[in-house]
Image (tube, rainbow over all chains, first blue to last red):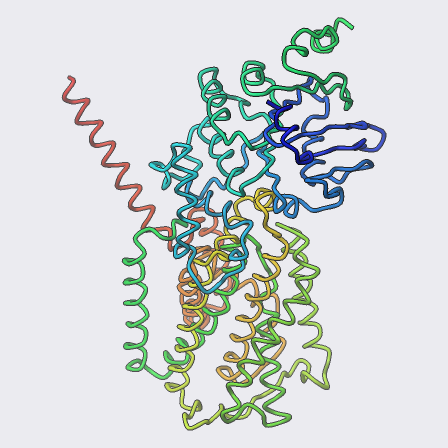
Length: 256
Length: 334
């Protein structure tokens, strides 16, 4: 699928060139090169502390890169703040659910939708009078199956439900690239199967970069995997190749 | 915090309460009229602070600074240039809001980068700077003595009459309440609530949260300046007492007591604090301890303020009803 997209033309959605992040003497991310094309489904796996979340934070601009470049649609975004990257078509979810707990599901989604519109600065007109924003919220919530529960405060949802609302929020900005930080973290096996189904239902044009420990979800959702170890990409390949790789076995089982 | 639910009923109750104030006040004694006028002015200040504290989650301890800027501007223009004592009063109102906004725009550059306790400390320090300026800059501010204002403006309507002045202040209060209510329901206002709940998330969603907080800070400063203009004319004297830390603390107490994040809660709190202060200070010399006690008790036992009482009663009732059902089920099973 990835190759067909590549043939269809258009450059990569995201390209990393020798991206590094150091914390003092610790090289959390070392010279990572990565290309993601439209419609790619890619996972980054690696043992705890491999630098996966740090890599995400550098890509999304939460942390500044020490060296190297990140290009989004060919634009060098290395020094950009998070909100400008979002405006260009990048969205992410967090390993620890990050929502607005005391607001309703609908309010959460409305905030996510207005985030990229100029109307976020409008002070003289109630938010509820924006028909198009509400229509979009309705479409997003209906396709995710949350329209009936739109008036429930998020803190009253189950953990699995919150993880899904989190992704709906990520989709509200019409991203071309979605970064998911352990979407199945802390889910029961039934819930994570549901999450995998949920992810597979998403728009096929959307590029997804995924960090995940739950290998069932990874093999179910993605086509290609990069393995990160001590901040370096040590293996890159299709799910089949990674599954067969001895190097990866060593890293995970510590036989090396 | 569940704005948008049963808004019509809430509107009706608030409208009825305001109408009651408007109708009853003229028939009470002249002292009460003055007190209610003071309460309304502080209500504007408290509501402006609520935009920061209740909606954006920024606990500002320097709101008196803007009141002071508006007040001193009014007093200086009136005594030095005899400006603002006829129809130009309206110009002074605009200027007062402008100077409040400008001061906030300047202070915001330092304060907005911080959050939580640090924000509190910086706004406190900036507020003290304004106090120091008022106290020390004798040639402009009159130092410790302050500035005594000439009689109130007369532009066909004589504000010197306390009742007339009450009506005008009521008008300003109502306009402020309406404007701020529209503000908090707007996309911008909702973005402030989002920042209060989870600022990092807002940034990832595409909001420049610094800018939103900065704008909110400036708006709050403008309304603070408006309160200052009215306060100068209401009190007839502007002095460092008005910009002292205690005034900022009072404003914070009003919001916390009434209920942060509700706007009308701040107004309610202003009424109660002004009434308590005036009434208690005639009774006991240690009245400040009573206010302090009220403050502590509210934070400990009623963190949502007085405005959260109906919600609490509803929940308590629902709970006891639930318990009742359980009990009847239990007895049925026996």
